[in-house]
Length: 290
Image (cartoon, rainbow, N blue to C red; front, side, top):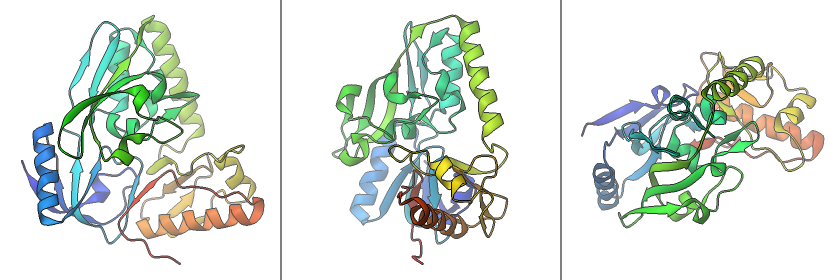
């Protein structure tokens, strides 16, 4: 298994920004993944698991530890009424395989840019549906390096949260419970959602999707827009003029630009409406407090 040194994380995150990882590895099996975590524990090195990096901002100073990238945990298997996907399988690919098999339930996931592992950890969702709606079980690597299959009902799946991170588990694969459907209807639903995304989201720019969680009783994008922040910029980072809930990299943004912009958006929204926005994007590395 190759372990790279000083790997640029801008290559592995959808923001296309940030510094390097001291070490970077892409295990292909649970055994290899386990060996990496054991090595880190023995040496005292920090480690962090990423999938497609679609919900992650790595600081410009990078990460002084090991990034474990799950993209090679890519088993994908379809049965009569279920689909099993490795942690590194893109949700778009899983949804496409479900369509091919005439299975309905994953249409909402077709346009989510993340991988299966990350989507399960954060209970990703879109257009009124969430991973928990179709998740049957998750196979994880536990902290004591056992491979266990956990039923979905034991994962405490909520809005952008689950018990997986709290328990120190690493997702290996997930099984989804789907239903037989009409392929033409499934395709039509996927096409409709794709069109809605293209119309309303700034897909032409690097971003991490919805930057902030939805505050109870509000919509983050609406609050940001009403605070007059559409188009607001810090360096190469901007609040999208197409959808204020998205922070975008216009091409040369640093992680610091993105972080400072997010802090200013939070400050302005709280000052204007008294609502505290919480980042949906995960931060990795050291970010300077202003």
